[in-house]
Amino acid sequence: MRYLYFLLLFAVTATVSSPAQAQDAEVPLNADVYRLIDRYHIKYNTEGLHTSFKPYGRLRVADLAEKADQDMSQQSAADEYNVNYLLNDNWNYTRYDRDNANSRSILNHFFENKTDFYHYESPEFTLRVNPVIGLQAGTDSETDGLRYVNTRGIQVEGSLDEKLGFYTFLTDNQVKFPGYVNNRIVRDTIVPHEGYWKDFKGDGYDFFTARGYIRYAATKHISVMLGHDRNFIGNGHRSLILSDYSAPYFFLKLQTQVWKLQYTNLYAELTADHERSDQLYPKKYMTLHHLSLNLLPNLNIGVFESTIFGRDKGRFELQYLNPLIFYRAVEQGLGSSDNALLGMDAKWNIFNRVQLYGQLVLDEFLLSEIKAGNGWWANKYALQGGAKYIDAFGISNLDLQGELNYVRPFTYQHEAAYTNYQHYQQPLAHPMGANLAEAIGIIRYQPIPRLTMVAKAIATQYGQDPPNTTDEFGNRVEPNYGGNVLKPYNTRPGNYGFEVGSGIKTNQFYGEFNLSYQILYNMFVDVTQVVRRANAEDSAYDQKTSFSSISFRWNIPQRTHEF
Image (cartoon, rainbow, N blue to C red; front, side):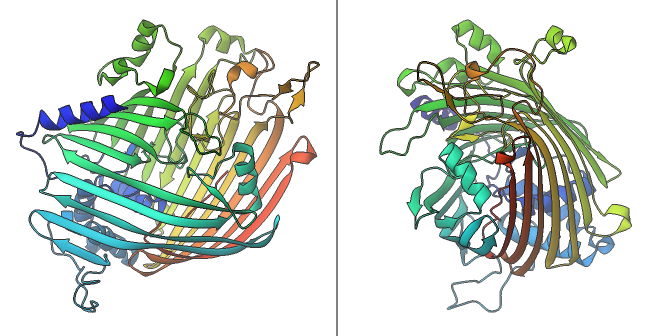
């Protein structure tokens, strides 16, 4: 990974004398905040904001909020509240007056504005410091005792000389999860979304969450970012390309935005395998290119390619540093069998009310085998299609979303942990892996400014693997029908006859209702009800879960487990 440091050093020093744009931090990934950004992007078609690669820079979001603010005479009270929230949340990048001053500061130093526990602002330097608190208590029908989340931490961000943005987020967490989440932890020996963990009071888990980065304006159109965080590609509820489900990872991101184009190069260091012991975990790497083009102010298409690879002693393959090349050609030239994916995404905003979006991911396939219809195992691809409808049926702040996802068996799997599409025992794309077909419906309604209600229904058909067995020689056999991306594809039981649901076919319903009230800026009380039902061909795999909870959050998004 030291080669990435050299690349970063070159990018910075080669452009140190170039005129650079004001550099910003990014809006942290948070489904509730990004829903607001998405809503106003659909309304106003801001061409400068490419929405497929998240997170977004605060400067772009501030521009969107300012555009929405100019149209407040036509908006509801909830929209006025939301736009004011976005303006205040990005106060150091807005050009207009804002209602962010706080007349009730503490000791003349703390809470001088509504958004920050402590802040400092000068022409050369801005600083924002905020506490992070997440408390949840609930009961689960599958598990005895209280289920809870206890999170405390700090968030710091700012900018220096209008060229460097920085961010850090650090929390200490003790959690007792609902039963279905515990089952996933037992299967994969990892806490969802997190890295290293320890046991806590029997069936609980103790872990740190640490994210952070620096973001440098190399030129007017190029930013360079070095960090430990997550990224998300797409406009849907799920991403079949790169999601924010896994643990944070170390990465270097080069992002170029000029004319109608945004071109992103992502170089990431991942953890190939994880065993609960004090040792250096094996490394692997991901290189990814994504090109986004605004064909029209309301029509965007993107193409991507990515490669997952590992080498002896954690060595990085220098040829993958080339920012403008077809990775498959590099792979063939090296004589390697690295795991390459490619595909596209698209988005079309219609009438400032509707958004259509989709994704296509190609892992491996042969057109002749697809035409034959024999269920060849290596026809590995994924499809997504979805739509959003804001202010549905003329009702202000009623937003609907529908989405379909289809992922063939063995997609994202590869020969070994060094090349499969996972990080720290967690999928890099869909949280349920592959071998699935899924339908998602989401209703969001904001009847008054501070209150938001969200109802989700997710119906999924997928195939599970039967229990492990032993062969005639006493060797352990782990059946593999292509759903668990952690397994190598060479353990499959054959070459043909694989369709979505192969293995133990399971029909699952996940329903969630959430009522969230914002007490103060970024301070929420949530009431949540989750109902989950899994009906399998083998009744031993059936599950029924009802989880009820109440939460208090301050400067932290909701922790969800939608699998």
